[in-house]
Length: 129
Image (tube, rainbow, N blue to C red; front, side, top):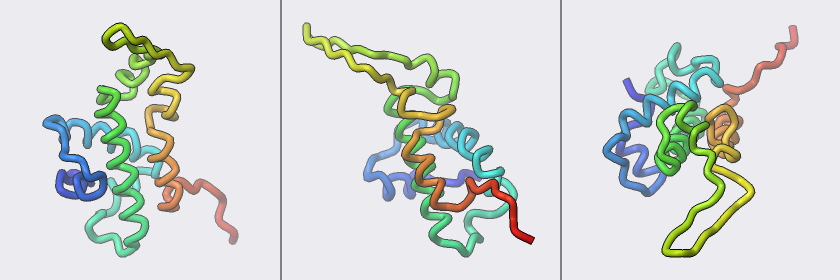
């Protein structure tokens, strides 16, 4: 079962999902789930009573899906291949010092990672006895 459906994605982003939304959603899950200790693999997102955690997680997932769609990648490997630093359109060339992969950490979009921080699922500290 997908953690984010097309309607939720459209509501969160204001963007109509691409035709390959399901593929991107699965890929985004596979990139984000390990960071959260596979929390929503072990717990039902629909039964989670922490609404803030659910909302921030879904926002992060939506951002990751949109990021992957924007750069035309559906896996970490494909994202690494997108290291383009310049573009030329109608004789006008623009070069930058960054690439799409510069705004990601291990394939996860940095803003999505920031949103995951607010879920508390990234915490790996030691509990106090």
